[in-house]
Amino acid sequence: MLGNPLEIHQSQKTFYEVGKRLFFQRGGPHDFSCASCHGEEGKRIRLQDLPILTKNPGDGVGFAAWPAYRVSNGQMWSMQLRLNDCYRQQRFPYPGFASDATVALSTYLGVNAKGSASVAPAIKR
Image (tube, rainbow, N blue to C red; front, side, top):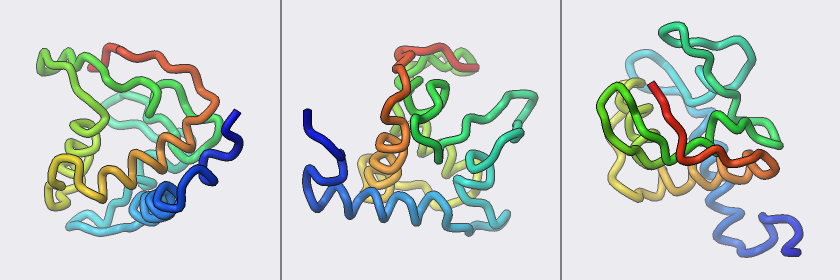
């Protein structure tokens, strides 16, 4: 057993901490952060309950449900595309594919999801 995943490599710990800061960093024209939608119970968008992504074990309908088939556009989406779409919805600048920001957010979300069962590939609206 590897033990604490943050003890594996210093760069992973750094990416986790950067991802955590990015998750709570507010900005853009609506002053949103990832935590605005995914930081507390009872948040919904267009009648869809939003997963809380700060808990451990994580929410199986959040990070552990990607990649997923998006019925709304008939495509398979990776977590990278899901993060990019969240940036778009918040009116943030679109991050580059596999940018340090999205890798850091994925690291933060992945560590928080430790212990949840993967339901990937999933089906999403």
